[in-house]
Length: 199
Image (cartoon, rainbow, N blue to C red; front, top):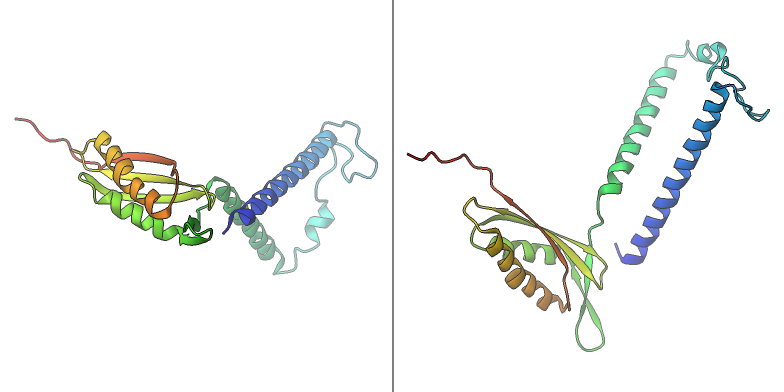
């Protein structure tokens, strides 16, 4: 997904979130105002604390229909699942699908983001003391950024792992992609191990 499309989707997402929030605030405020017996417009369906959201006739209207309650429960379940999916999507950073590589002749080539991530992971995992590496490209096609997670052996030195990552893996990635800079956020974690008994 390229940068302009991502920017448009981000803008649409913010507009939808804003509209949903505004609608919830307005409806909740109006129901609260009616419940507290404050003045509400004459067209508002609930005018006081004695009013209910659904009248007895409304609640009994579909009771004899066998499909009604399963349909209501299924629809509400779908709405809840969609809302949860949307909420989780807000915390997920977009992954960069491709990187523009300057070929030096005024043209540009496209490098798959997944390929660059694979090379970064392989180079980082090849270092002494690194059990596993995970790399994710973010940012723009012309200015990518990376997040690298390293899982280290208990004996490994975090300083040496960072030096190897920046001096070897990231330097090779920058050179091969023709990038002037490749800002990186590195997270290091050690393998869980049992404490050794000392005699």
